[in-house]
Image (cartoon, rainbow, N blue to C red):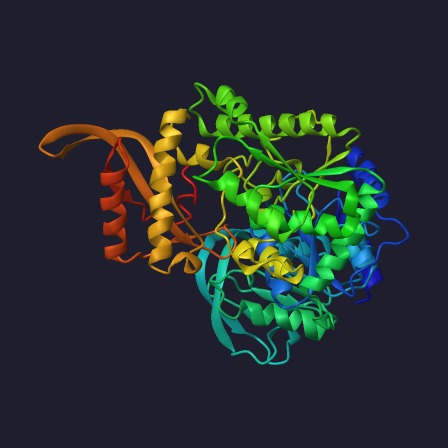
Length: 551
């Protein structure tokens, strides 16, 4: 069946709804790209139907050295043509195709004649819009299943076993395939678990992007290199060059201040901007009073020594502590900190003269866990101070070149930019600082206790040569007090919790099995060296169900 025929079928099926904001959004994006903008060699477009796995798809594609971008269902071809798309992946999502206003595949997906891979809801949307039939499943399918191939010549399953484990997460199912399609595989609960038309359009009812589908990466690899004919030549250097072009297009002759925290995210952001706009950039390091022991001094020394950037130090400790007085709710803390950061940067900008932009090292995990217009379909986990915690009114426009990267990708870019390994592999430290590791009200007294505990944790982790093997390790000061005995005297002190986790991208995490002797030394030192703490516990909760930070 020709692509044009599919397009006509799809147009006949889709609703006539329009979004008044779409045109302005597309125009804004188009305006950000000038004639000097250099496209990447090739890319894969991922249509986001609201799945929290969408960026996991992007991650898997990038791991195969193919550039990918995620776009909303209302995004136009003109908004993504600069990446030279070689194929389209349709993500899963929480909706049913039968729901009012359920998201649909945009026309340009069919118009361009590119290879298409629909995953879960993406497959159901393909079937629904192309004249097949989707029906509510009598039995929902969540978890592992065994996939059995119906054919031995499906390109998507090239060089793979006839049966293998996959991960399912769906309610609806395909009952009748669109014209020109055939069934490629089935599971016990899904008679149609994979479809194809022999012309580069595929649908998978399961999720190849998750680790619970062990051969999922091979499936994506087959799609990219056998159907889309990708070359797989995207590298951190490509990203650097592309980002420099984007920053220059966005900023023009404007002046930028960069929020420098000392972490790898802000350092890479600063280096990218420095390469893109040079003297138009001023970096500002704000001491919000929520830093770890000696951090203000170490950050300034590190950046002055290694980066040679124009750096301004601002001590706003009293401002932040005043704003946080009496605040105990975690979400409120984040919002207060986010807004006060912006106000501090605005004040700094006014002292510098005309300033147009604020650059910050926002990463995608920050975005998808926060409530923002671009991820309305996903559930909010917590508000990150630099995303959902930003005030509604801002005088400065944001520059966020790392917004759609994961931490490991940022580290690769940092090495490409020439950052020192000790900077690149520094353990993450949250923007809100110790405020979200201090349960309850933030006071100077309690911050000092937490700083002392945290110093001991890191000191012992480094002494055991474990620092570079752990994603994140730190102390948390609870608002609980317990009875203890020290020197034959009764004590009533705080409980300190130790947290150490490993992760790839901060989206999921597992607790680290620290050696007992390390835990013993940490506990002994804290209760003996830190007044006010008489009990130490170790957090062995993974993410999910917990989060990495406590607040």
